Length: 147
Image (cartoon, rainbow, N blue to C red; front, top):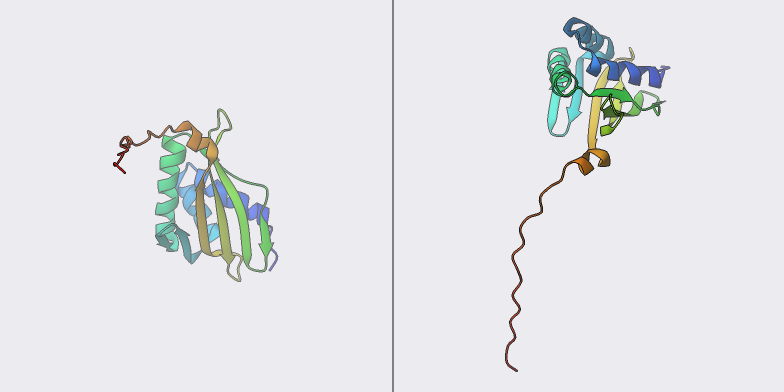
């Protein structure tokens, strides 16, 4: 099976950016097998209906409401039935990368995604923008004991 890994990565990311619900649904059907699986953290998504819910939920939160976009990094590779690539979520106005991730896809004999493992990692750019308050430290008291 020959797969144009970068074209698949670009189509995959386009589904997460898609604003039209019917078009997003078609993109999911063209990418994933009907019984396709998607795993991210402890979450398991199985089949087109759950995939549509997952992709739409991410789209609404990150693209529609927050105004961010996703793009595939130009590093997609295929080896037999496995395709890997990185993606970025970025702010279109500034180009600032807010999050990155790694996709590991296993394709079926028809070239559709059978299993999708998504690994998320916060980008340092995003972490620098959030100032976390440091916990209040209790002052240390040093006692001097007589000899």
